Length: 143
Image (tube, rainbow, N blue to C red):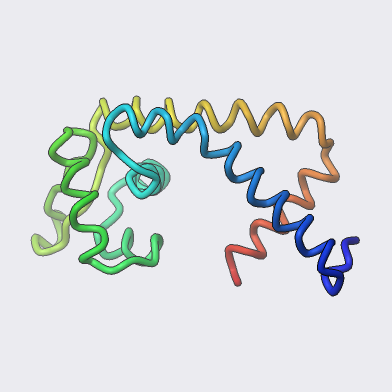
């Protein structure tokens, strides 16, 4: 176990996290940049793919951003025909989000690259390390 009271251990843990995240996002960042998009766009399509018929309000809560911060990137995705917004059948004021066929292909391509990397490093690290990694990341997500 790392001694996080030790500054060298603190730096080691933070550096590992930084470079791991950098490697995880590198290929997706290239793919996004080619379309003039950024990580916020990836997060939007990721959660819409994960939760079909997600409402705008639910997406705001998942991303932890304001309506104002979501407005422009979501509008860009709709203008690029990657995301559709339809009125809910039960409440016409509620907007539900879905990926278009092109949006699904784009999200899958982004995810495929990241999954390839995870598969490789998970195989190298082993099941116990992967379970620890999942526990750490889930803990960070709840912090």
